[in-house]
Length: 249
Image (cartoon, rainbow, N blue to C red):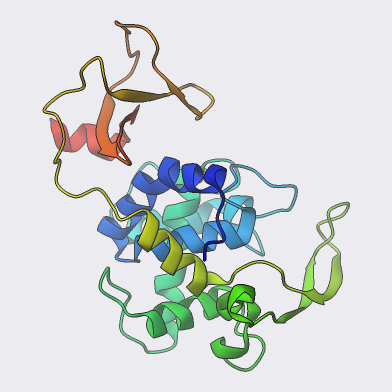
């Protein structure tokens, strides 16, 4: 049984390098970040609500963003409202802050489901009495566990106001999404692939709008410092982050 369609899996693949960057630098499991991204904005870049694709509510101030970056030695964060990388890294730092405030051990790439579930419950406000009762965390309609979502969200017309929602939650919770993306998209292992792309390989190139498109020319000039990776039977080329450029020097 699966929840995510082909377009959503492609979105996970698109953003997976960012989730893995956050896992490496901040310690939060990449699949947990993917699941939060799904729950908050369906893997979006921008949303109609305040808070960006990770729906920080209230929105993070520039000072908070800088503080998160300084805590983990990341100097090039911008706005979590409009930049997915900044949103991913801030979500990871936000989670670790919530975990620390509860006196729990920091999340690591090896953290188990219960630790991840409790962290996701904190991310969503720790309503419903426990993570087991939280639809945000534990909803799983395909297994007969369709829960009811109740609460308030910022009004789309006026973010200063909040509107109440009370309805069945038809989406999978964080745990179900974590399990699925781990099963369907294990992170790229050390490169076990052709040494370099050849004419038979599919090469996906990040465009200025952030979307990946297949390369159809036999020769292409990439106007930026790039990172080349191999995942899902395809080669992926994206701009290198500032930290990656520094590390390569």
